[in-house]
Amino acid sequence: MKTIHINELQTILENSEDYKKELSKYIDVIYTENGFDYLPKKNVRIISNDGSELYQNSEKLLVKDRRGFVVTRNQQWSSDFNNILIPMSLNFKSILNPIADLVINFERQRRIRKFFNKKQSGKYDKIVISVGDSWTQHPLNKDIIDILDEKHENLAIYCIARAGQELREIIGKKEYVSPLKTEKASVFILSAGGNDILDDVSVFTYDYDPKKSAKEHLNKEYYNKLIQLEFWYKDIFTNINLYNKHISRIIIHSYDYPIPIQSGDGRSGHWIGKNLSKKRNIKDHELQKAIAVEVINDIHAILLKVSQLPEFSAKITLMDFRGKLKKVSNWYDEIHPNKASNVVFADMIFNAM
Image (tube, rainbow, N blue to C red; front, side):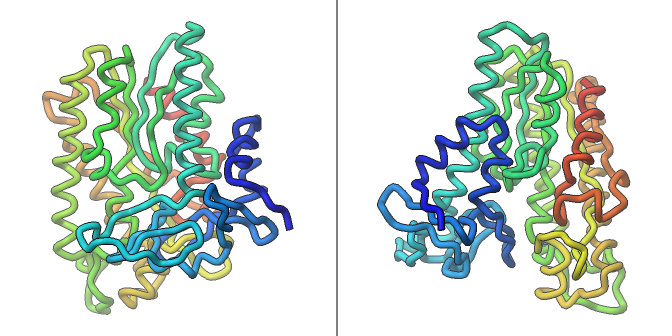
């Protein structure tokens, strides 16, 4: 059993040439009903700043979402996973556990430091701002931004993407406004909208009905969410035009059609297949796939509609990622492309700059 302090783990990551590979020696991504969590491997003890051990047993947490957050109605996360009552005014507050906090913030800060180091060196010819979800900031998998950064030294990428981030969070926090105001970026990459629905697609579906098509299984909440997504996309693109006159290219993308998990296919994740099966009794794999196709097509349709508006059309390029990843082997898990697939998508984005 290896024992390590959480600050030592951070130091190891900081000194590693490939921090994601190094991180995988100490941390497992545990998939749960509500997504995933970052936890110590079974042969590793990680000690937090208050001296308590970060347990490997994730079941001591009540409810988690896929980002390593703990989301409870009246309870707050603590480092020993004991439940601490908090005021009802903090209902549904999401609080990062220390490992998730370390992983996500380390990656964000590493990327921002690298950006400013490159900016200071002057060894670049294009500044790119990247905002979004785990397709552009994944904790362990090589994501699109990793690959763009590795393959193209001429790019200085200011990336504030975060795994699990929803479009509604991007709108609420508006972290992207700061680099828009300070950096002479020519390209803005947005990867967002999928998590708002695919976080748990069962929320947006009716219970199984053999008489209903995939489209007919999508409920009123789903269509309300699509309306919100359209409004939020417009808000971001309006702010880009407002705060940065240097950006000549806004690159957005649809998502590829995810393949819901089947027993024995070697992947992890509960976003689609398992949630639909358990929560909506939608067990038929073809129906699960068809529902996912409806969602991806609807998100693409919204992106296409917004990209063609007169105030945005001159700048926006919509990358259509649909239909590229047809095999289970193309996927890292249920909704994330693997490294080889992300190389394809990164090349498409680079060629659009």
